[in-house]
Image (tube, rainbow, N blue to C red; front, side):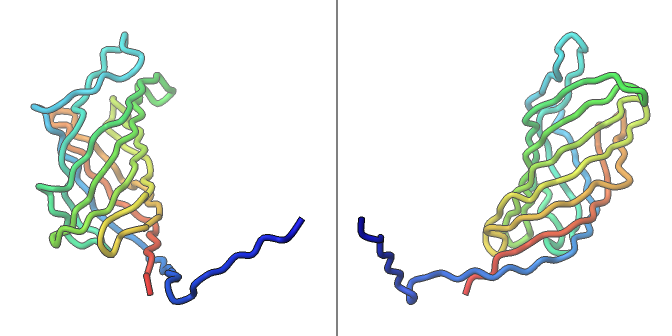
Length: 167
């Protein structure tokens, strides 16, 4: 059996370099109370939340979010009784848009205590557009709180983002 031969054209090869940055952000999630809703499982718990909404805030790498075009859509919701009280666990797809139109795509994993409104969780950066194409990373949600009357949630984020620099 003859060995396989691989030929690469170095002129067309796209070499990628990456650079990792620390991320700090302040984020507010504003539910769309007139939009879609999501029922948490088990359905018998009767927990129904806004299924989508908008995101405002500022991040040191992204800058100020374009809050009209920065959105979230809840993928799933689970209700559980814990020692700390009733907690809702949500997985949410988030699109953060910069003022120049570039976007960052994030998957959010959040726990919300329904008694005291405390929020915890993290975000996985999964991709983006423009200079954020191919981005990866993770941020942790800190000092999170949800207003039980409005559903508006605020928190700080710290973590990292790795950007791909194409040459």
